[in-house]
Every structure is written in C-alpha cells, then in structure tokens.
Image (cartoon, rainbow, N blue to C red; front, side, top):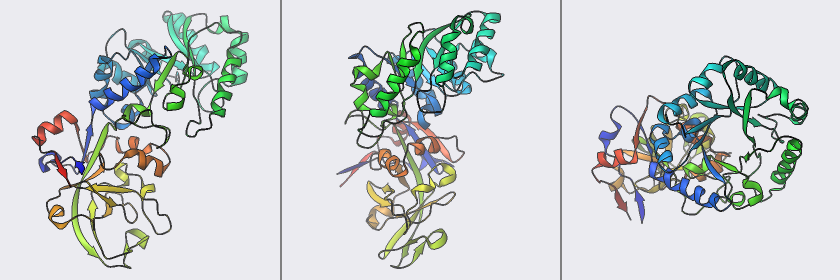
Length: 402
C-alpha cells in the first residue's frame, strides 16, 4: 500500500511546481540529534545555510528556536541578516562561517552576528574593528586538512606566536574545524584531523571546540569526536553522509516537491526519447512530461540514458515512474507505463521528491545533496507551502493507493 499526497490543482495556481516544507519533520529530526548529543553533553547547533538546504527558513527557524536551539550557523552574511530578523532574540547566537569579508564589518555589529575567522588577515581586521567599536566575540576556524576555509598550519603557528597582539580586542568563543570525509565506514581521516587540531591548539588558551561531525550516525555516538558543540546540517532535513549512514531509521525527509504532469503519449520499442536520442525505449511505453527541468534545479545528472543508466525516478499516484532521456531546461520525460489508465487520466501532478521518491536515493545517485539546494532556490515557477498550509488547502484529500 503506497501512501501518496493528493495535490489539488488549485494549489498550483499559475505555477507548475510546488514545494512543501514539513516543519514538524525538521522538529523531529532536531530532537533526534539533540537527544543523542545530550549523552555526550554536546551542544546541538543548527546549520541554516541555503535556507536549511532549500527548505523554508522562515517557517523552520521559529520551530527550531521553540525546540530549544540557541546556536545557528550560516555561510553568508545575507543569510545571517535574514535569520536575525526571524530570531531577534538576545539568546539566539548566529555564526557566519564564510569569513569576515571586506566591506561587511558594520553589518556584523548591527545585526549581532558572530564571524568565524578563517585566516590571519581576517583576525587582524576583526581585532582592529573591535578596538575601534567595542569588544565582541569571534570564532577561530582551523583548516585541518580540507584545504578550504580556515587557518592552515603555518597560520595556526602565527596565531600561537602572536596571540595576545592578534586577539587583544575580542573574545574567542570557541575553536572550530570541519571533517572532509564522513561518507564511509573508514573514519581514519577524521581521527587524523582531530589529532591535527589538537596539535594546532597546543599552547593556545583553552576554549570549547566544534567539529562539523554531525551528520554521521557513527560520530554522533563517539565522545571523542562530538567535542563541545556539533553542527547539524543535512541531517535536519533527513539526510546523512550516505544512504547507509542515516542518523536514525525514524528520521524524516522534511521537504516535498511536485510538478504538473502533461501530454501522455505512446512510444514504440526502439524509439528514442529526448535530446540526442540518448534513451532508447526498451519496450512499448507510455511517457509523460513532468514540468520541472534543470533550470528549476532538477539536476541534469539525473538524466537516464543508454550509456548512463542510473535509476532516477519520480512517482505518479504512488507508483514509480522512471526518468527517461536527457532532462530538458523546463521539463523531464518519465515512463508512466506502469500507471493504470484510470489513475493516469485524473493525475494532475508527479511527485518529484516525497513519500515515494526518497531524496536520499537521488543524492546517492547524483553523489551529493545538491538536489536539495538546487530545487530549493527561489523560482518563479514554484509555489511554496508548509505542510499545514497544503493540508488545509487539500481539505483532507490525502489518499491511499493500493
């Protein structure tokens, strides 16, 4: 028995895509992490970047605050300002991890956002700013092997040798770093990074530590890797490092996408479908158009071609409908052969991500959770709802399909 959400046509209006943010699922997932981290006395912080991986930060931030979250991370200052307007509370601490970029100094002060300083130059600039505008907090970010953001080893040594001078006008709230490989059972690189951080911190004043060790169920149970604060990222929306490493079997996907369906047609075995004739029909088929394409964030990598069979799919009335052919700018072709005609004739939309299309499977196929961020970008074709709003609009029309 396949549960599926029946979307009324009126919900689409002039739009061809619907996004549904499930705030109660985000609440549920936060509780899973928070309860687990409490066992190691670790603060549970939330990563809110990309509007919480393409969901709806406006609906979700108040829910997380209500659940007791008080530490939030964004990647860009503009995200931090949006979040501060949603959470104007003195105990809601917002950290910006992208760095203390030039020209942004006063915004950090005006909106009470704490910068994560990624290099000596940023440390110097923040120290000078605080000297002139009053003492404030900051986080020092160390690069322990990712070679992305953070102080490399030689700058960590500079900090150690000139600590008093470099930090004379601000307080270090904590030290942080970021694991770069948590997608397998082999955590040797993580322990190597942890040892490297310990070396960096030798001789520096003691402060709490945060490693981005959060979305691996293995690490969350490891007292040696949780440290003082864990930063929950893709786990908030139900993801994990891989399909085999999800925090808990009861974690829930917190966003659904639907697209209008049109133009059912018959295709004969041997006919080709889509640009470059990249997919050849393996049988006599019925195909249809889902009105979502790569311009809407449905990754072209998910195209199903003869030379690259990957298994991406959508669902109609709870029934799996494989993607066939190259994904176009605004539409995607799906195989609806297995959907009975009596259901297909009344179907107004296709489930792109939802109860029958696990985004974790799509992420596994495409290699990462980019599909969340890409589909979640602002789009004139997309109407956005919370689950409560869509259920009210549907007037309890959710249905079951056998």
